[in-house]
Length: 347
Image 1 (cartoon, rainbow, N blue to C red):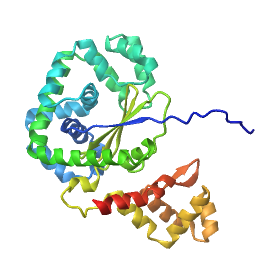
Image 2 (image 1 turned 180 degrees about the vertical axis):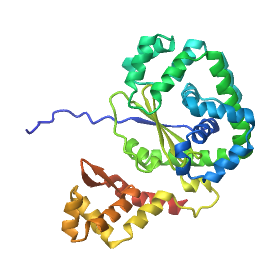
Image 3 (image 1 turned 90 degrees about the horizontal axis):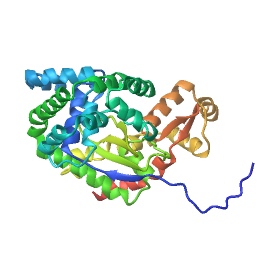
Image 4 (image 1 turned 90 degrees about the vertical axis):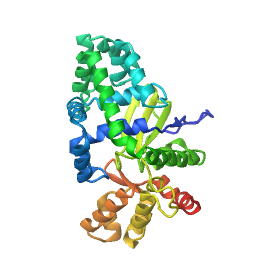
């Protein structure tokens, strides 16, 4: 059915916010070392984490074990979102001064504006509200257990734990590389800030995160981009009131800011992916239409296993995605290749 469009209103997008701080890096480091299943997938090798654990005090290791059992790194991130803290002392003082009910409310995950009353009741310890929060988050791998823990744990004990683990990690890990970390995070922040004037909000999110396509949602007015080094190559996604948060991995060139010749990982991957005749043919086909694996093999008269291999490379480079069982070209990623290359050449 045809529609006569009589409106001049454009589809609204979200506003981009950018922040960086070594305090985020501190909390995410605590999250990383206590996420045992993911250790092998991080940029830092396993022996880095093993050597790091050997260097930590017995007290800090005990608190990290507690973090791993109860996912209290989430509470640290929730608290860090309340305001911009200048340093660790300001943050830990803030934790100490929060009234008990407010503290629990902040630590509990945000699950939507219409559920804020339930969240508040759960913070007060109401059993029915706690169960409803657990039900609302049942598709999350750890939220239900985390909600039960936060809602029923003694506040003084939890505050002491968060302060000890945050201080301990900061002093043992962050402090020794403090200036280098600040430089890495600020360099990446400045780069994204510079590009924010040249891209749409959606394109900036896709570029910063290395390929995440985040479309506007009715209840989300802002997207907060926070660079992180310790959890590379992963993006970590979170929700707070009215805001979608991406703790995204810093780019290669931010890690070596004084070396103008270090290119971005994804820029290299994209050009490598396009440096093959078969893959260029696939890109051309997908530029014309989304296609199934069978469509592509028929068009190119090449075996499925070979085409699947080439599509895997294109997907790894974030140039192709799967939508409704069909392969689709990420047109924004292709269109912005020139700008990415130009940014590198002019650095």
